[in-house]
Image (cartoon, rainbow, N blue to C red; front, side):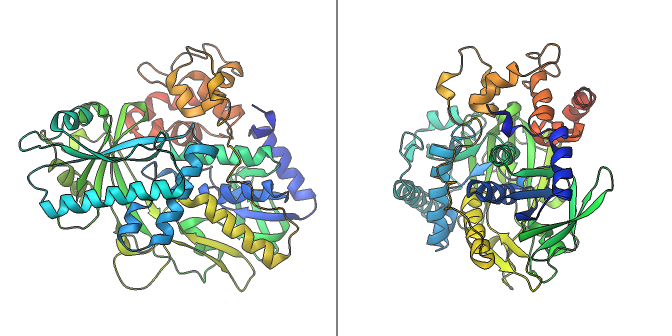
Length: 505
């Protein structure tokens, strides 16, 4: 691990001062989600000077509210969008084999074959899975990384998803997709990799009055304000993009997930994939996750009006998810089983009429009259491609002297050297940090670094410290809600928030 990748309060203060007093940067990126950090990494890797500012924390917005999936684009193939389907499969392969194999793994997806599923629906799912296999091969992703789809018998289906309904179960259709250990961890890894190449990653810095060559920045922790000049200003604020460029037309849609103790689903090892009644090619997923949880999602609902900092699930969405998943379960789940929930807003490009579920997930790069370059739309899986497309546009428009895009081969922090991890290293630590796992413990100066932060939680005290010394966490909320995701369960959050505060400088 190189100290050049470490983000801390001291580094933030020094780089914020240097930005205020120094020359213009080549690229100013506004927004610290996966798109913004991806752009910062691409710019730094091309040899450009870059500063990224985020008014909250890294992954504060939509980037932490996803299904934690790296989709292969199968849904988009079914709707005829071959381009985005192929790109998604390619980008998934890049993440799983080159840039972030430590953060993205193959997740089994089981569609149980129950009497409620008609023959035509079964044939469509099987055809879809075969098309997914073809996409995987086209993208060059080996079957050793993403296994081929197949049919399994009823006993195997029940072993993968122990609470699945048994009466009439004749087996299951099994496929694999990419799953992130956590979406916010990916954002942090991209940001740190960019920092290692010289990018200034500045959280809790708000941007306003942006033009094509400047912006006003405000340190929200001190209220200090200054102007910064840049050869290109890129707006990557997602659903908040209209605050920087009011001319943009966005149509946010809300996706909601419920959080369960994994025991409520019998500690499954596959994502139970349940067709939504009356819908074609839409499913609800019960996905096993880190920290002994299962996330159940997801919805696609219109979200008009002002954009909240933290969207909230609606009561109707909670009832919808429970009702759909219960069609495939032997036991009935109800609201008391839900231990947490979250919702995110997709920054969809407004295409006029039609359901938000049917709007293209493609992205758009738009130059405003002010000169600000905005990127809107898109999906997490394609963040690297979106960043490349946006930077290519900025380089052309502003005549920047930049090298070629290198991010398809640029390993993120923790991706290389996994084979050399000493035996006995906690599996949960390796899952979250990859090859950096030994360094997390080695860099710790706290007492009892290998102890859990609280009893029954597989997050170590060293991880809380590392979040502050290397991952840019400035508040207890940053540690609990975005670096470790303990905060997705309010009861767990209450147990650790005071402990997290002890690690702050």
